[in-house]
Image (cartoon, rainbow, N blue to C red; front, side, top):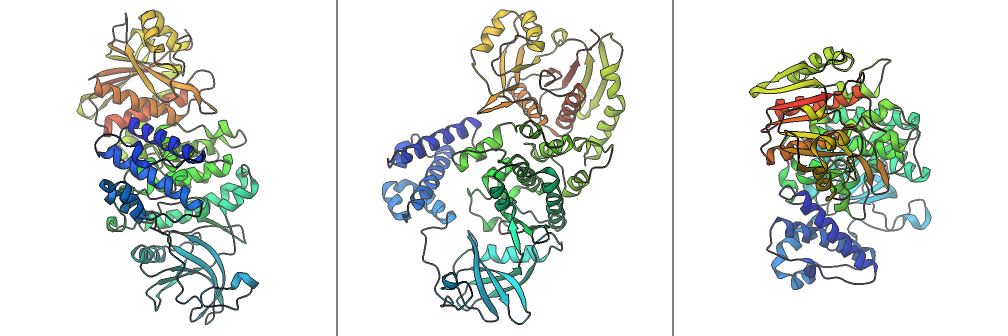
Length: 585
């Protein structure tokens, strides 16, 4: 997916929704009828997406599609078809019969057909997944309950062995332990794990049918973070952290389970086919959908945040009709502020969720250790957004924080308050004054989704630039929050106006400013700046209007972004200004 543009992703999502809607009307649309143009990256991803949608729909109807029928319809796509079938598990085969004998296990008919294994008494089937079948068992020699995960011969044996080795390295009361790994006589594998008596977070959420109270969810998520910290200290990445992989035992303690998609410190690229999407869309970090083999701990931190968000809100952060539409939203749509969706949660928890789910990995907690420090808040503790692991960045942030109050509360006369110099001759100026008087290549406006330019910064720019700019902006129609529209600057000295949309409707939600949304707007501004060879740019305090943040939070968010961009980003911009309009005026 990394070669595709946002417009490509949007088109694939739209085609997929039309395709699925046709099936819902009782039609059987042909995948080939939705293809046009050469077999480039866009067409390849579209075929994969439509084929996965169709396979799921057909299997839900009891059909067993085979790759040969699709190859006959689309012979040019045979390789892609085989790849999708392989990643989806191929045609469904009957359950393996070897070692599966009639059993006298308790539970009446429920026990019939359960396997019999030497040294174990199989009691019940707990679940089935992509990696195999999990049973509850009794280990006879040791007189203990165990969970037995079995994979049939010819299955993903390498991944199964990898899962066992990964979990065995982790020592934590909050990770389900591995006891042993056996090779069965038929070539299948058996993973013997700790049996956790209880349920999982997904079932609890489904039973509640709404938000879980913060004081109940918070201890569980602290324990999940402790388990994930133990894994990350062994350089292990889970890559599929989600509610169903968080077990809640009889003592109400949380345990992390199922490292079947985990990745250890040794490169594991050979265990995953190119083009596969690894993980669960509702909780997957944007970068994981593009390149699952290159993610680091911060992808697990995103999944942690998405899971915690779902628990506290009663619904996932992003939802959609297809997996692709959900992934597209994770990548492109701003997160609805947690405290806006559920005013009952604490402000510091809302901040923590937003930082966990920042679209840029660089804006998230860098480690589970730092995340845990914030999950144990002390009176007067620093905001989760004030933590940084980069010594250079920390030095700039400390210098900024020492002078921040003077920027906001200084005397009325306007002009440059401060100047921060970065490597490569880049300069970040903090200025008191009005945005319209800045002599730079591009000025940034803060507006609602209709681009009306009828209040605040937008109105000030309209009066200075002239009505032609407003007419030019309105031609774009309604623009979703987080996007930036570029127009000419009219009578202003600047070459361009960048109209950043800080609030508006997104689906059924009215989106207000958030830190992630501000960062998304600033990222879009830098993208346009690089495209248009903009060397200098001036920002107002974004998101301080009705329903927005305090000036302090907006200034902090913008300084953090600009400092990181000037330290580590690739951009042609040499000068950025944050323009603060004094309240005394």
